[in-house]
Image (cartoon, rainbow, N blue to C red; front, side, top):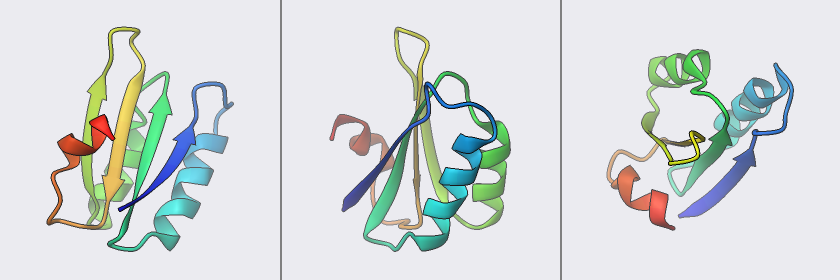
Length: 83
């Protein structure tokens, strides 16, 4: 699996949303988006779900969000947090 890393922690709105959408439009079943963000990007996650993507989220001890979005339904997204 190819990891597409998007560190949005220092980005201003709407740049993280725009970049995420660009990545989602070009993703294959062999890639996934791994996003780091200061907050949970609810509009992005809702749109991704509507488009049939699979999503996993977790918040770490420093209150930063780790978000994984993939088209592939056969992989365990939770395992990708450790990659």
